[in-house]
Image (cartoon, rainbow, N blue to C red; front, top):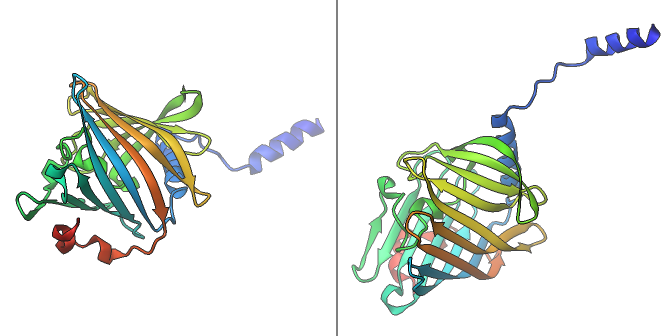
Length: 259
Protein backbone atom coordinates (compact mmCIF):
# COMPACT_ATOMS: atom_id res chain seq x y z
CA UNK A 1 0.00 0.00 0.00
CA UNK A 2 2.81 2.38 0.88
CA UNK A 3 4.35 1.91 -2.59
CA UNK A 4 1.08 2.87 -4.29
CA UNK A 5 0.74 5.95 -2.07
CA UNK A 6 4.33 6.96 -2.90
CA UNK A 7 3.73 6.48 -6.65
CA UNK A 8 0.55 8.57 -6.56
CA UNK A 9 2.36 11.30 -4.66
CA UNK A 10 5.15 11.41 -7.27
CA UNK A 11 2.67 11.58 -10.12
CA UNK A 12 0.89 14.49 -8.49
CA UNK A 13 4.07 16.58 -8.16
CA UNK A 14 5.69 15.65 -11.46
CA UNK A 15 5.29 18.31 -14.19
CA UNK A 16 3.28 17.39 -17.21
CA UNK A 17 5.63 16.56 -20.11
CA UNK A 18 4.27 17.01 -23.59
CA UNK A 19 5.54 14.84 -26.40
CA UNK A 20 7.92 16.64 -28.75
CA UNK A 21 6.24 17.41 -32.06
CA UNK A 22 7.83 16.68 -35.44
CA UNK A 23 8.21 20.44 -35.97
CA UNK A 24 9.92 20.92 -32.60
CA UNK A 25 12.27 18.00 -33.18
CA UNK A 26 13.13 19.21 -36.67
CA UNK A 27 13.92 22.69 -35.37
CA UNK A 28 16.01 21.27 -32.52
CA UNK A 29 18.10 19.16 -34.91
CA UNK A 30 18.76 22.00 -37.35
CA UNK A 31 19.57 24.36 -34.48
CA UNK A 32 22.19 21.95 -33.18
CA UNK A 33 23.60 21.65 -36.70
CA UNK A 34 23.85 25.43 -36.94
CA UNK A 35 25.30 25.91 -33.45
CA UNK A 36 28.15 23.50 -34.17
CA UNK A 37 29.27 25.68 -37.07
CA UNK A 38 29.48 29.04 -35.32
CA UNK A 39 32.59 31.05 -34.52
CA UNK A 40 34.86 30.37 -37.52
CA UNK A 41 34.84 34.12 -38.41
CA UNK A 42 36.27 33.92 -41.96
CA UNK A 43 37.57 31.37 -44.45
CA UNK A 44 39.20 31.05 -47.86
CA UNK A 45 39.36 28.05 -50.17
CA UNK A 46 40.04 26.95 -53.73
CA UNK A 47 37.46 25.08 -55.77
CA UNK A 48 37.31 23.07 -58.98
CA UNK A 49 33.86 23.18 -60.58
CA UNK A 50 33.17 20.40 -63.09
CA UNK A 51 30.09 20.73 -65.30
CA UNK A 52 28.79 17.58 -67.03
CA UNK A 53 26.08 17.37 -69.65
CA UNK A 54 23.79 14.40 -70.24
CA UNK A 55 26.38 12.77 -72.51
CA UNK A 56 29.12 13.09 -69.89
CA UNK A 57 31.09 15.86 -71.61
CA UNK A 58 32.90 17.95 -69.03
CA UNK A 59 34.11 21.50 -68.62
CA UNK A 60 36.20 22.57 -65.63
CA UNK A 61 36.49 25.93 -63.91
CA UNK A 62 39.02 27.03 -61.31
CA UNK A 63 37.57 29.25 -58.60
CA UNK A 64 38.59 30.85 -55.33
CA UNK A 65 36.11 31.55 -52.57
CA UNK A 66 36.10 33.75 -49.49
CA UNK A 67 33.49 33.85 -46.74
CA UNK A 68 32.88 36.11 -43.77
CA UNK A 69 30.73 35.13 -40.79
CA UNK A 70 28.37 37.93 -39.76
CA UNK A 71 26.97 38.04 -36.23
CA UNK A 72 23.20 38.38 -36.16
CA UNK A 73 22.78 38.05 -39.94
CA UNK A 74 23.71 35.87 -42.89
CA UNK A 75 27.28 35.42 -44.07
CA UNK A 76 29.05 37.28 -46.86
CA UNK A 77 30.63 35.36 -49.72
CA UNK A 78 32.88 36.22 -52.66
CA UNK A 79 33.45 33.83 -55.56
CA UNK A 80 36.03 34.66 -58.25
CA UNK A 81 36.68 32.61 -61.41
CA UNK A 82 40.34 32.14 -62.40
CA UNK A 83 40.03 29.72 -65.35
CA UNK A 84 39.21 29.11 -68.16
CA UNK A 85 39.96 32.31 -69.99
CA UNK A 86 36.38 33.00 -71.10
CA UNK A 87 35.20 33.34 -67.47
CA UNK A 88 38.40 34.66 -65.86
CA UNK A 89 37.67 37.65 -63.64
CA UNK A 90 33.98 36.84 -63.23
CA UNK A 91 33.10 37.68 -59.64
CA UNK A 92 30.02 36.87 -57.60
CA UNK A 93 29.24 38.59 -54.30
CA UNK A 94 26.47 37.59 -51.93
CA UNK A 95 25.17 39.07 -48.70
CA UNK A 96 22.96 36.44 -47.13
CA UNK A 97 20.25 37.49 -44.71
CA UNK A 98 18.03 35.72 -42.25
CA UNK A 99 14.75 37.59 -42.61
CA UNK A 100 15.07 39.87 -45.65
CA UNK A 101 15.93 38.92 -49.26
CA UNK A 102 19.57 38.08 -49.94
CA UNK A 103 21.61 40.59 -51.92
CA UNK A 104 23.68 39.23 -54.82
CA UNK A 105 25.81 40.84 -57.51
CA UNK A 106 27.62 39.37 -60.51
CA UNK A 107 30.46 41.04 -62.42
CA UNK A 108 30.90 39.80 -66.00
CA UNK A 109 34.17 41.04 -67.56
CA UNK A 110 32.78 40.80 -71.10
CA UNK A 111 30.05 43.31 -70.19
CA UNK A 112 32.33 45.33 -67.90
CA UNK A 113 29.53 45.96 -65.48
CA UNK A 114 28.15 44.71 -62.19
CA UNK A 115 24.71 43.12 -62.45
CA UNK A 116 22.46 42.78 -59.44
CA UNK A 117 20.68 39.43 -59.24
CA UNK A 118 16.97 40.02 -58.73
CA UNK A 119 15.29 38.10 -55.93
CA UNK A 120 12.87 36.78 -58.55
CA UNK A 121 15.81 35.12 -60.37
CA UNK A 122 17.28 33.25 -57.38
CA UNK A 123 16.12 29.91 -58.81
CA UNK A 124 18.17 30.42 -62.00
CA UNK A 125 21.39 28.45 -62.64
CA UNK A 126 24.64 29.91 -61.30
CA UNK A 127 27.16 30.25 -64.18
CA UNK A 128 25.62 27.37 -66.12
CA UNK A 129 25.95 24.92 -63.22
CA UNK A 130 23.30 22.78 -61.56
CA UNK A 131 23.54 25.02 -58.48
CA UNK A 132 20.97 27.79 -58.34
CA UNK A 133 21.74 31.26 -57.02
CA UNK A 134 19.72 30.43 -53.91
CA UNK A 135 21.95 27.39 -53.31
CA UNK A 136 25.01 29.66 -53.07
CA UNK A 137 23.67 31.73 -50.17
CA UNK A 138 24.58 30.79 -46.62
CA UNK A 139 22.11 28.72 -44.63
CA UNK A 140 20.05 30.71 -42.12
CA UNK A 141 17.47 29.03 -39.86
CA UNK A 142 14.62 31.59 -40.32
CA UNK A 143 14.63 31.01 -44.10
CA UNK A 144 12.87 27.66 -43.74
CA UNK A 145 10.31 25.67 -41.79
CA UNK A 146 11.38 22.29 -40.43
CA UNK A 147 9.76 18.91 -39.97
CA UNK A 148 11.40 15.75 -38.61
CA UNK A 149 10.42 12.87 -40.91
CA UNK A 150 12.29 9.78 -39.72
CA UNK A 151 15.59 8.17 -38.86
CA UNK A 152 17.51 6.55 -41.70
CA UNK A 153 20.84 4.92 -42.51
CA UNK A 154 22.77 6.51 -45.39
CA UNK A 155 26.07 5.00 -46.53
CA UNK A 156 26.41 3.27 -43.18
CA UNK A 157 25.73 6.42 -41.14
CA UNK A 158 22.78 6.87 -38.80
CA UNK A 159 20.96 10.01 -39.90
CA UNK A 160 18.02 12.23 -39.14
CA UNK A 161 15.84 13.07 -42.14
CA UNK A 162 14.19 16.50 -42.11
CA UNK A 163 11.82 18.23 -44.48
CA UNK A 164 12.50 21.93 -45.02
CA UNK A 165 10.27 24.39 -46.84
CA UNK A 166 11.47 27.83 -48.01
CA UNK A 167 9.84 30.75 -46.21
CA UNK A 168 11.16 33.32 -48.71
CA UNK A 169 9.64 34.36 -52.02
CA UNK A 170 10.70 33.18 -55.49
CA UNK A 171 12.33 29.92 -54.45
CA UNK A 172 12.58 27.27 -57.16
CA UNK A 173 11.79 24.59 -54.58
CA UNK A 174 8.63 23.60 -52.76
CA UNK A 175 10.59 21.54 -50.23
CA UNK A 176 13.82 19.67 -49.58
CA UNK A 177 14.59 16.46 -47.72
CA UNK A 178 17.83 16.70 -45.75
CA UNK A 179 19.93 13.86 -44.28
CA UNK A 180 22.00 14.93 -41.24
CA UNK A 181 24.32 12.42 -39.55
CA UNK A 182 23.72 11.85 -35.86
CA UNK A 183 27.40 11.61 -34.97
CA UNK A 184 28.54 15.10 -36.00
CA UNK A 185 25.37 16.82 -37.29
CA UNK A 186 26.81 17.21 -40.82
CA UNK A 187 24.57 17.41 -43.88
CA UNK A 188 25.11 14.30 -46.01
CA UNK A 189 22.46 14.59 -48.70
CA UNK A 190 19.67 16.91 -49.89
CA UNK A 191 16.79 16.05 -52.22
CA UNK A 192 15.31 19.17 -53.85
CA UNK A 193 11.72 19.20 -55.12
CA UNK A 194 10.59 21.64 -57.81
CA UNK A 195 7.50 23.83 -57.87
CA UNK A 196 5.45 20.90 -59.17
CA UNK A 197 6.61 18.89 -56.13
CA UNK A 198 8.66 16.54 -58.34
CA UNK A 199 12.20 15.48 -57.46
CA UNK A 200 14.49 17.94 -59.25
CA UNK A 201 18.03 17.61 -57.91
CA UNK A 202 20.03 15.54 -55.44
CA UNK A 203 23.07 16.98 -53.68
CA UNK A 204 25.65 14.70 -52.07
CA UNK A 205 28.29 15.78 -49.53
CA UNK A 206 31.40 13.68 -48.92
CA UNK A 207 35.07 13.68 -47.90
CA UNK A 208 34.52 15.75 -44.78
CA UNK A 209 37.55 17.31 -43.08
CA UNK A 210 37.60 18.98 -39.67
CA UNK A 211 39.26 22.35 -39.11
CA UNK A 212 40.22 24.14 -35.88
CA UNK A 213 39.14 20.97 -34.06
CA UNK A 214 35.49 21.91 -34.59
CA UNK A 215 34.35 22.94 -38.07
CA UNK A 216 33.56 20.29 -40.67
CA UNK A 217 33.75 21.01 -44.40
CA UNK A 218 32.80 18.62 -47.21
CA UNK A 219 35.58 18.61 -49.79
CA UNK A 220 33.32 17.08 -52.44
CA UNK A 221 29.79 18.22 -53.33
CA UNK A 222 27.85 16.90 -56.29
CA UNK A 223 24.54 18.26 -57.56
CA UNK A 224 22.73 15.86 -59.91
CA UNK A 225 19.75 17.06 -61.90
CA UNK A 226 17.26 14.18 -61.99
CA UNK A 227 15.25 15.70 -64.84
CA UNK A 228 17.99 16.70 -67.31
CA UNK A 229 20.78 14.23 -66.54
CA UNK A 230 23.29 17.08 -66.01
CA UNK A 231 25.49 17.38 -62.94
CA UNK A 232 28.00 19.68 -61.27
CA UNK A 233 30.77 18.58 -58.91
CA UNK A 234 32.65 20.93 -56.59
CA UNK A 235 36.05 19.82 -55.27
CA UNK A 236 37.30 22.03 -52.41
CA UNK A 237 40.91 22.41 -51.25
CA UNK A 238 43.34 24.70 -49.42
CA UNK A 239 40.93 25.78 -46.71
CA UNK A 240 42.23 28.45 -44.35
CA UNK A 241 40.36 30.03 -41.45
CA UNK A 242 40.59 33.20 -39.37
CA UNK A 243 42.98 35.00 -41.69
CA UNK A 244 41.68 38.47 -40.85
CA UNK A 245 39.11 39.07 -43.60
CA UNK A 246 36.75 41.99 -42.91
CA UNK A 247 33.76 43.70 -44.52
CA UNK A 248 36.20 45.65 -46.69
CA UNK A 249 37.09 42.43 -48.51
CA UNK A 250 33.47 42.06 -49.62
CA UNK A 251 32.70 45.42 -51.22
CA UNK A 252 30.45 45.59 -54.27
CA UNK A 253 32.54 48.40 -55.79
CA UNK A 254 35.62 46.15 -55.80
CA UNK A 255 34.11 43.39 -57.94
CA UNK A 256 35.57 44.80 -61.15
CA UNK A 257 39.06 44.65 -59.68
CA UNK A 258 38.96 40.98 -58.68
CA UNK A 259 41.54 39.02 -60.63
